[in-house]
Length: 129
Image 1 (cartoon, rainbow, N blue to C red):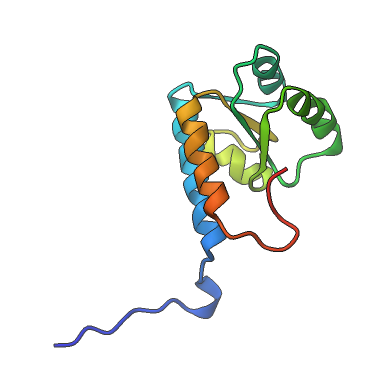
Image 2 (image 1 turned 90 degrees about the horizontal axis):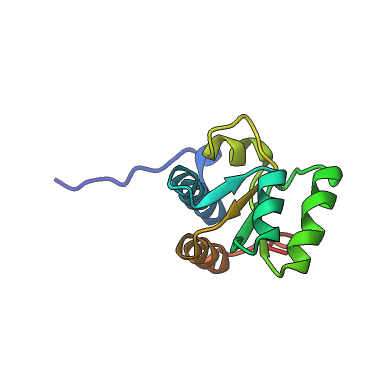
């Protein structure tokens, strides 16, 4: 008997970008549970000042006020910033309602996230800063 291939309805298809975002969020959640990541603007700023930060994930819908607190410091410390997903999805991955920024401390975890984000195809106008 020949098996037929199941297809998803047109509205339920997921792009490669969505799959990469889900993988990144899973890694971020793992990092928070293993204490390889810090959550929130103040904790990310503190880790950056101490030179512990390897990577930062910013919510795409972060407020200008939050961005003005963290982005200049990350740029000065030459920490790579990835514009990840919306604040609610980023927060859900780390056990909060929403969060603006997550900092990755663990170097191997940061490398894994970099590899995922670098290999993902980007839509025009998106990407990492």
